[in-house]
Image 1 (cartoon, rainbow, N blue to C red):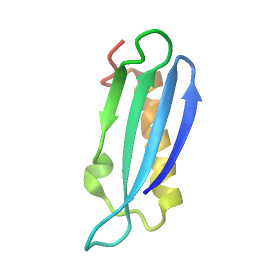
Image 2: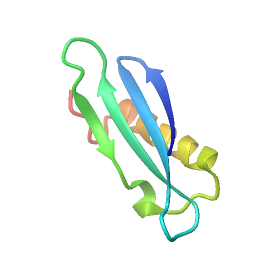
Image 3: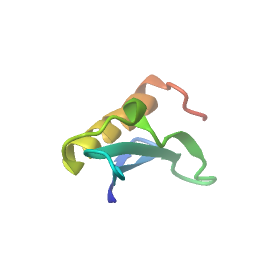
Length: 80
């Protein structure tokens, strides 16, 4: 598994690229946590893009980070 974190405003985005077992590529996953007092999970998707197999870990991580930023800025599914 490949992993990175990015801060965006009041949120921290944890992105992962998970090597797919018996399939090609890497699946993208993201967890968005509101920073500060409670540090609650605001958004989570362990199977972004329906589990699409990205060719490289870097591509999966870029997609996961973009999805996390979209969740934060668009407030799509984000719990305050």
